[in-house]
Image 1 (tube, rainbow, N blue to C red):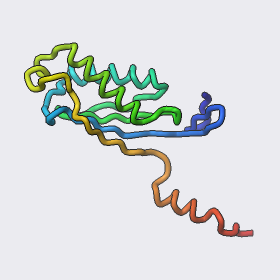
Image 2 (image 1 turned 90 degrees about the horizontal axis):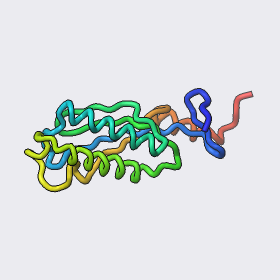
Image 3 (image 1 turned 180 degrees about the horizontal axis):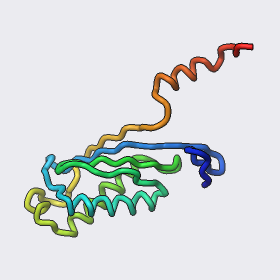
Image 4 (image 1 turned 180 degrees about the vertical axis):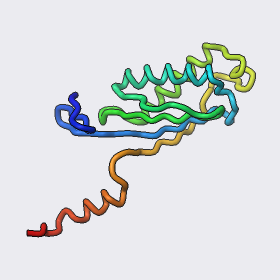
Length: 140
C-alpha cells in the first residue's frame, strides 16, 4: 500500500476511510478512570494495527470512549468494532480493576450497541453537487 497526498492506494483501490466510533460502558457505569482509559487505548491501538488501521484519536469520559480510526477498505467495520470491544473488555476484566469489578458484574464491560459515523473528506452537499454535475456539459 502506498500513500499519495492524503489518499492511500492499493493494487486496485484508492481510498481514504475514517470512522468516528463511540462505545458506552454496560449500564452506562462510570468506570473508566485514567488507568482504565490508558489500558483501553493501548489495547485498541494494537487491535487497529492488527487490522492495518490507525487509531488517530482516543479519549472519552467516565462512561464512554470516542475513537477516530482510519481503516482500509478490506476491513469490515463490524468486525473491527467486534474485535475492539471484545478484546478490550477481556483485557480490562483480566486486570481486575476495583473500580470496574465494584460497578459491573458478569463478563461484559461494554454496552452491546455502538455508534459509528463516517467522517472526513468533503461535506455531503459538495459531494451531492459534484455527482449532480457529472452529466452537465462543460463550459468551453
